[in-house]
Image (cartoon, rainbow, N blue to C red; front, side):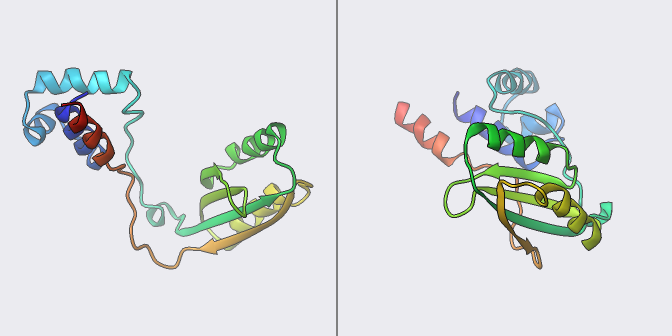
Length: 161
């Protein structure tokens, strides 16, 4: 791992559809080197997948929500059962087990309030382990990115030199 790898990581996080020529020009290298480095970054797990991000509103799923869930019991079996239920819900796009006053944080994109309510009824009603859930409806987006900063990786690389 070196600075060129970091430049490639940064470039691809902002635009995963760059051609090899565009990537090479952007990071100051050759196409063949970039191709080889990208493959190595995939093989090492630094790059997981390449996707296009769709606009939820244009897909008729403009109702974006965050849901925090509090549960009674936190053993592995209960957590895995809850996670399995979430995986079956296509409107839930992110789901995390978290620490603190709540136990899970979910994000969903819904077509309507009716779909939102039906999903919550399916997920939470009748689940004796769910104590409560609270929903936050997104009114405005101030920042939205999927790029993860590479500054810590660069700092570690600088320490090695």
